[in-house]
Amino acid sequence: MKPHFTFHIAHLVMPLMLAACGGGDAPSASGSPPVAIVTAPAAFATNLVGNLTFSASAIDDVGVTGIEIQLDGKRVGSVGVTSPHQVSVDSNAYAPGQHVVRARATDAGGKVSEWDTVTVQFGGSRSVPAWFNRNPTWITGLNAATAFAQTPDGRLLVAEQDGALRVVKNATLLTTPMLEVKVNSQGERGLLGVAAHPNFAGNGYVYVHYTSTENTIHNRVSRFTVTGDVASIEEELIDLPTLVATNHNGGAIHFGTDGKLYVAVGDNAAPSNSQNLNSPLGKMLRFNDDGSIPNDNPFCTTNGNLACAVWAYGLRNPFTFAVNPDTGRIYINDVGQNTWEEINLGIPGANYGWPESEGPDNVNESFTGPLFTYKHSAASPAGSGPGGFFVGFSVAGGTFYPDAGPFPANYRNSYYFADFIGRFVGRFDYSNNAAYAFATVEDRPVDLLAGIDGALYVLTRAGITRISAQ
Image (tube, rainbow, N blue to C red; front, side, top):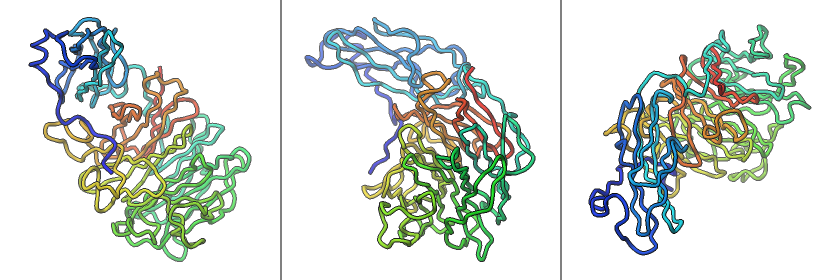
């Protein structure tokens, strides 16, 4: 299967047609829909700053009645009735980085053209769009944070790599951890994931994924019962195989809308693990809330065998993933090796191709290609190819922002993702298969969360940045 998402490699140009019809109404095939052409800015234009003029022309056989220009999926200016149509945009109101301009036309017969799209790069130094506030010091004082979750009463539970689960309550980091587990924190090991049970309000269950030192060094998922801000005795639910390498542990855990616990596990730096269905490494695993294995997992042949927990495979290092609470859709962020970072659609039984495939490279009919992928280095020309102007080295953090919330309407129904090295937050517009720059952060991000208060929270190694609508 080919990747679901690509940017335009080349921009549609029709100078001869425009010249023939004066930009407007020379005949074409009877009953054909109109054709729209973005004439400014140019595809892959870089470092656009200040007040910009976007323009589009259209041709049609019965007459163009409207031309609409959008920026990042939202209309700018009014719909034009003459060709060419122009609108003005102040780039200073947007975060620097990738943006997408597109245009479409409507004719007198009610037919609508395909979108004509160009990908461009804005310059400037703004950290978030003008319609947002960013508080980079909302929470400080964390020690090598790795993941976080939120309880229904609004508390944030923050995992620190050395084994402490911290509590943020009423915008304050509590001094006493909720719990502490003994971990091996060498390399990418340690306390790696945390999740609250869907019925946390009733049962107080909190789950953690960490590198245990008991008997052998291996990753474990345990359950604790919380009373107040303190957790009780540990219930050990899942023990994964002994670790060899110190990296590629994955780590994230979340409950799906099906009530099952999903666990992201890396290949432990042995790529062959990812394609081996007898190994839980390099996989997305799926369990019942008590650690038992559901009998409807796609590869289960022997009940009770840990390999039965495999839900999807062919992953390298899925450090983070997210569940859309409205639809149940799962996006898996897989950290790449030499070239590509991936955001994958979670599908039961899917094979994402690692190590034979990375990003859009070597994707064949037996693999599920990424929804969105970006490169470790700029393309030539910059902005062309998959990922456009996004360049980073470690996709680390993702969350779905719902349709209901205080963000402006065009910033909702989006998947926000972060890059650990690039220190940026991007927005994947899954309705339009496009990605846009959204924010920058001052420390290295490791996780994202759409809070119940409608803010976007960015967990970094040392604190939490809060981004809210104005």
